[in-house]
Image 1 (cartoon, rainbow, N blue to C red):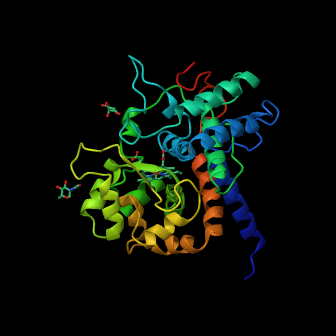
Image 2: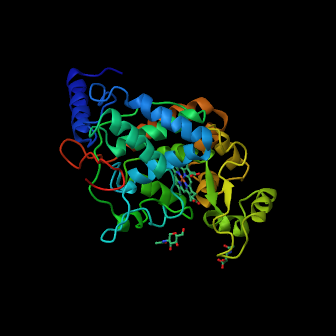
Image 3: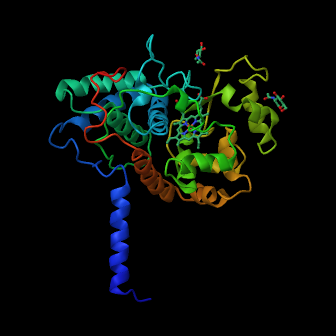
Length: 322
Ligand code: HEM
Ligand SMILES: *[C@@H]1O[C@H](CO)[C@@H](O)[C@H](O)[C@H]1NC(C)=O
Ligand SMILES: *[C@@H]1O[C@H](CO)[C@@H](O)[C@H](O)[C@H]1NC(C)=O
């Protein structure tokens, strides 16, 4: 098929317009190259030491970035503590008693402030920590785009509004919530592969293990042992999201789904006779494709509505505005 030169020009123009329209136009992988050359090695050493002490922390830091990005963009809003006059996102339903890693971010921030004071945002630290955690646990690497600034505020109402979809979601709700953040159904399935590491509380999967039929019966039986049927008893008991290798970032999550051993309703729904089955099947046999798609999708997630230029601020302390 032959392209006319005017078509080529039109396509070039269109791509230019699309790039200009992206709010992340100012993020770049070398943003702190001159202003904080030791940034990446500093973050990595704190992440590695935290995750070597407790493997789950790698999962927690990865999730922290997701929950930051889905509420008002990747702006560090999730890190703000409540005060007497301000309620932030930490006690929102998807976060309360569940999101962790705040102390590790504080630890990184204080080390970074020592070497380059007032330069590096908390939002960027979270993005780098998510990458380093993934790598430490055996997953793919990617170049993290940087230059995000920190919000001066947070939104409890937004965090509670369903923009972070609950584990009871239908497939169409999952797709819709990711689409609302500029991520495709494919990105959603790919990023759900994060559930190859980490833990969930009984309250997040109780209904699935007692009431659902698309679950392997011996798997359900095992999970019921440490997750009592009655609401209010054992709510915080933990189970691994990937029953096989919960501290290793691999593609076993997808193999579990094929065997009806997804822990969350929102996991199993990705392989339940619907439009995403084929991608789950592909990832279950092709770890390389999963890895490269995952890296690309993480970069895309990290691009969600960052504050750049003179918007926001570089917080001194990740827990409060300056
Ligand atoms: C597709 C929609 C998603 C839903 C409904 C969902 C839901 C959940 C739930 C309910 C938990 C357990 C929380 C608890 O019981 O305390 C969890 C854990 C986790 N999620 Fe997701 N998630 C989704 C997507 C993602 C994405 C996009 C990422 C990362 C890019 C991610 C990373 C994680 C990780 C790593 C954990 C384990 C955290 C830990 O052990 O501390 N999830 N998720
Ligand atoms: C958050 O969780 C704590 C216990 O982990 C609980 O006491 C508190 O009521 C919860 N807050 C909200 C707003 O759900
Ligand atoms: C199972 O489903 C029933 C009917 O919807 C509900 O009342 C019950 O609470 C569910 N059980 C669990 C353990 O979630």
